[in-house]
Image (tube, rainbow, N blue to C red):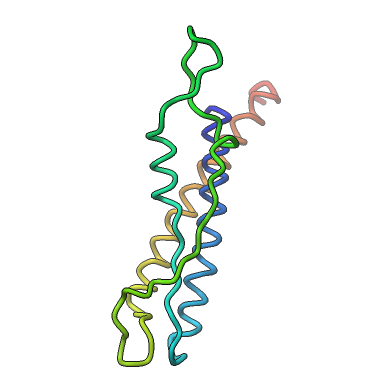
Length: 129
């Protein structure tokens, strides 16, 4: 696995952690009158960066942009356009629980990919022992 791929996975783990905190905050404030649901924007930025033109170091070489050059950050925003749930606020417990489950699955998959990469590196360093 390329170093760039590991960096992307690390960025994604950071995003998933932030998203988990935002979802937990939404659930904690489900009964708070006037609370506005928060969400995290990352997937769109990642997709835009992955589809952007590749940078080259030499006109004979083509390489992907380094993830560290991407400057990807999580953006937490308020979802003001969502309709109020029961007149209290716009947080829907079913939506939050579905997003929490999806987030947990993505976190588990991504952390296993990273762990597998480092396990392979350890085996190579040990010489297969």
